[in-house]
Image (cartoon, rainbow, N blue to C red; front, side, top):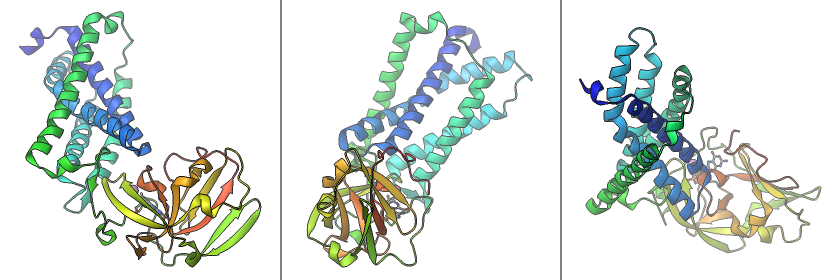
Length: 344
Ligand SMILES: Nc1nc2c(c(=O)[nH]1)N[C@H]1C(S)=C(S)[C@@H](COP(=O)(O)O)O[C@H]1N2
Ligand SMILES: [Mo]
């Protein structure tokens, strides 16, 4: 019987290894929504992929652990949570890999949306499952041997991730051309081919604003959208957390130019608010890198892409790029005083 060949401690270590990988995968997955600049997003995506794939390395051991504990605790513990956890973990992993190799949608379903939902569910079940089998930390968990095993698991996970990524590049699979964030290219230089994407809380409005209210120092100035095309251009990558990206040339007015005549509070922020109510707050210190765009690739924005004016926030993920902007308001408060992702 295989259980004889597996010492007790190995069972405990398998579980700890799985827990560690799940925690790292969950945290790096959350973090992936927050980073948009090349190096940090590459590191976070690599750690996320490796932690997920690393779970596969422990499947043979976990199988033995489960068999043994079933024999020991037969009928005493409700296995429903455990099996739901297996199912959701498998779904999360499968959709993660599917997104990597196949792209953003399969049969009309957003693969990454399913991945995120299944991942959140997995996180909840991990908590339930771990509470049911709570363990105290033990001296031996930090023994030389345990640390070597943990290091081996980390190296093995990264190697598996490297093999998947390298394999895609060698075979010319679409996943080989992904950006560091893990996103697939969709419609660079061709806005018509770029997806129209809303955050799960929002929809394309029937009527977009014709004017933009600039609120600063207690005064509101109503600007005509036509006056916002001042010829400032920036080439920037829109990278949606739904798993696609596109590079475009955007044209409009840089936010620091728009605010040139305004008294700006030290350490203040700017609220960029859509007609739909969708909003993001950004630090004023970024104003030189932010653009209110009326044009994309030399043509006026389409309704779906935010006409008549949208925010272009280079280096930030897509949900910062507020579309259908109706109000720009300078505020004293810090930018981080808001939900980390849009909730309205
Ligand atoms: N008002 C508003 N702006 C928004 C969104 C939204 O739902 N509402 N979605 C954001 C997200 S998540 C992305 S990825 C980009 C998508 O821009 P696109 O539709 O022009 O490709 O718009 C951002 N701006
Ligand atoms: Mo997005």
